[in-house]
Image (cartoon, rainbow, N blue to C red):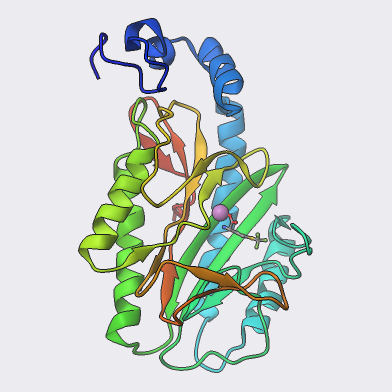
Length: 290
Ligand code: MF3
Ligand code: CO
């Protein structure tokens, strides 16, 4: 964007007279501006350090759970392991008791046609299943959130496709993140690639700011949208594209009020990371440091 172009915020003013200073301001005034204009908290270096620690614990728990996801194991057994791993790490599971009705478990386990928010139960994993495990935890008051897919043995081409496409969508979205880039560039990267692979992008659930709370502004949609807030150093948010083989629409289970299944019963997959915008680009906080 040039200084004399209309501002990205839609005010009709020139950029230089409107939001131009936003990526050039000193950290204090930038933080004030983001709080006032968007209700977004830019995190301080000390807060980012705390969030990074929480994210590393979250990623470690997810890693352990994925290693145990094998044919014959129930998702309830993964839930029990999750409780033990949280306890040992001194971490509080953010999903437990979250929302209305209160979410009943510490992790989400979303199988096959389940888009998200699957509740661990007594069904043993079977060859041919695809499973998303989503872990969100609180460590010393800071929040981390990530999820991954696991294939149980060989899976159909359609299931493999959504697993691969959702992973690539997340990678492409992370690759565009740096200061000054409009937030909707994330969705552009995701939906362009998903469509090119004949998949659809879920629009009923979004990524989110995170760090000092589980869900903070801004919303981070994965589908085409008009949110042109520029990324700024200290923004911490998740990107968690849910990609379907068939239609994008999901249906919430009327009994448990949580499990979201594709309307057409075709498979869905999701990968999630928590990232922070840095001075020069971004850092993936939930990438496990060995
Ligand atoms: N990553 C998911 C989210 O951000 C985790 C959901 S946990 C639940 O919403 F408790 F809301 F189910
Ligand atoms: Co999330």
